[in-house]
Image (cartoon, rainbow, N blue to C red; front, side, top):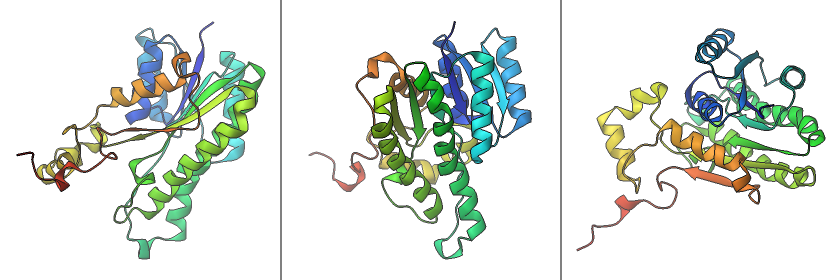
Length: 255
């Protein structure tokens, strides 16, 4: 029987890249997404290609929904070995204009959804001898940026819950890690990454002087879930071309 990887937000973007990577590595993959249309279409496309992919519709920002979808996946696919919490949203709002409604929505999805899905899979992983969870942090968990207070707060919290769950669940042989992607070229980000001013600004501060690819994020996540990372838990892995390591634009070129 194939091992089972669950990917929230797996119908598009970086979540979809993760789905494709785990399928290539021989996993059965459960896409969990709030968009029933996108999720069903993507699962059918991959299934028609002979991929072992299934779609489960759920709003994981609700605790009971997360529990129910985890139970369905376990019942239908037999196990839950991997969880990747990729579901998330971002919006820019001036800090002084941030409303209660916007803050709650962003925290519900980015933070609560991560907590609730992790809680929901924990009993299934424990009973089967362990598993691995990877959460999506962000560069904004590590430094500030204009008009992104709510997003940065949610991702900073994700990093901290990653550490707490790693400590809490080590006794069950469940490893919990996070990744913080840098600027990645995806279709949704193309409006920004193809802007010449934006590109120059970002690349001047990125030591590798390029954007990342979705597959580079997915490969790193697969590694964190693999036996090769069996002694790694509670870490946040930047996938950012060195952006968090230092700003090369601050220093003059070598003479």
